[in-house]
Length: 210
Image (cartoon, rainbow, N blue to C red; front, top):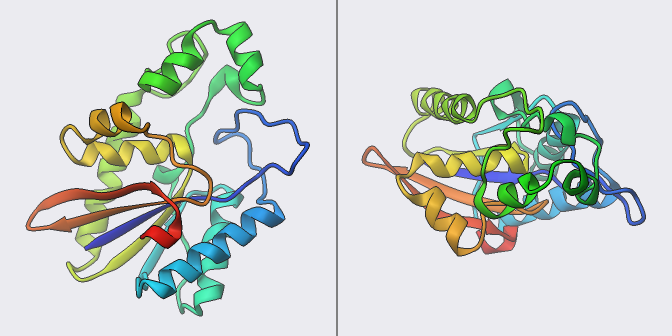
């Protein structure tokens, strides 16, 4: 099985206040964000990677990204919305710029960015272990529903996507220490599953590099 991960496209236009947006901030894609979805679709076509199913979160930015790919590729499927793919709830960071977060919650943003350390004083209502468990439960359901020859596409957000690295022992720490676990808007990751094992083939690459 081939699992393609996509981070949705841009939700901020040039000149907008760029702030932390989580599951409680349901922003739409910008025109550029929609164009990023079309670029992603073109890359899938060029690489002959045709998903038999596309999964996304309840947020409109992921649903629009997924539907744009479906339309561009003329796929006869609908996006399957999964709560387990929702973005993290950034608690008291929601709606704040990085500068504002740093001013109010000293050190926690830096630790999150550099070490992916789950903040303890910023009012995040979820637990990291629950997020990891949710991702693994979703993947197990995926394996139960699809065959070994299938290609599936998952559209989610940056905070959630990093935890797909937890499917492979040591991969999270390796990628974090190498180039960081963040996936940029419109970028892709590729995970393969063969003989009962997952492998991180690509992480945070432009769609054309799939």
